[in-house]
Length: 138
Image (tube, rainbow, N blue to C red; front, side, top):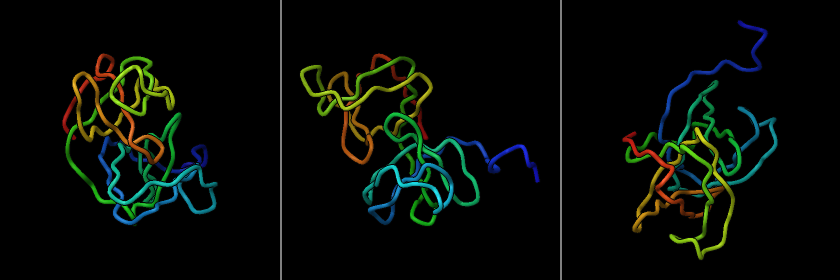
């Protein structure tokens, strides 16, 4: 084992759907880490790393981990963020801002409205403008 790394990881971009919720999102890959939020059954997030059956995924302003026991791989459309974007409660600039994305994040797209993509953000439905988002299939 490599003692220089806190936990072994395997990198892969996967769309992971919550199969049993509410699912605790944690600060690290294990039940000993603090809970930073909860995702509902049916929600889909993009995971970029796995460790001992746990999946790291983008969760609001940062990333969180959840147990693969309550996830199933999904398929669909993902957005790679290429610039800072406001995350809003609806598909337009008049809607309230929930947070901000960062370049290099990945989000699963659950729908579209005009120039806006619908995503799950910290367990709730949210919208991002498509101007700084590159679409690809997962």
